[in-house]
Amino acid sequence: MKSHVKRSIKFSLTIAVITFVLAAIFSIISSSILSGVIWIIGLLLVFMIVFVGVVFDMLGIASTAADEAPFHAMAAEKVTGAKEAVIIIRNADRFASFCNDVIGDISGIVSGTASAIVVLQMANLLGHGEGSTFQITISVLLTSVVAAITVGGKALGKFFAINASTSIIFFAGKVISVIENKLKIRILPKN
Image (cartoon, rainbow, N blue to C red; front, side, top):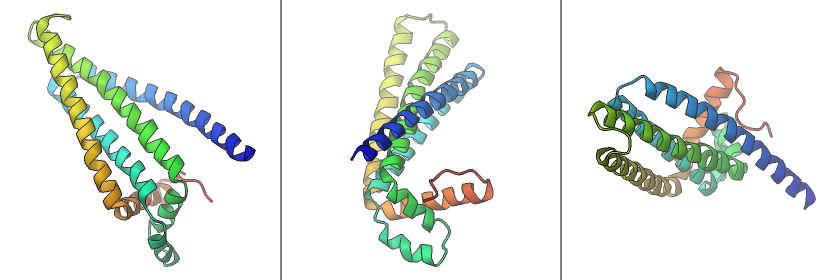
């Protein structure tokens, strides 16, 4: 039991450090990009960030809902992505934690920050200063729309993740296989 606790603590600390680094990188990149573009491009970027969060949330749920049995025969026949799908399912707790908590939560935070930048750009463009009624109204509207799309998208993603988990994890396995074999970037554990 102690080895499981130690392993869990080690993974938790590792994932916290990874989250810190990725959040900083994503915040810097999104802030840099948003400061140099018009508000409509910024708005599209916000929705793209939300979409990434929804997709990764769906991947995390699918990994916990999928059954590895269909992938064994495919892995024996060397079907691309099948071996990776088995590894994803066997490490579903870690995979889901990374997808849902790290990428999903970072996407939520970064989309909120990006939304604030877009609102300020819109208000300044239309001649309304920070703290004006117009700026506050736009901020409330955009925040509400982003929240609704995020929550609605994640609810829809969960439906697909549960009902099509095999297809989703097989696709994820194929993508990871290509990244690991062609780009030589290790994503999944070897065992």
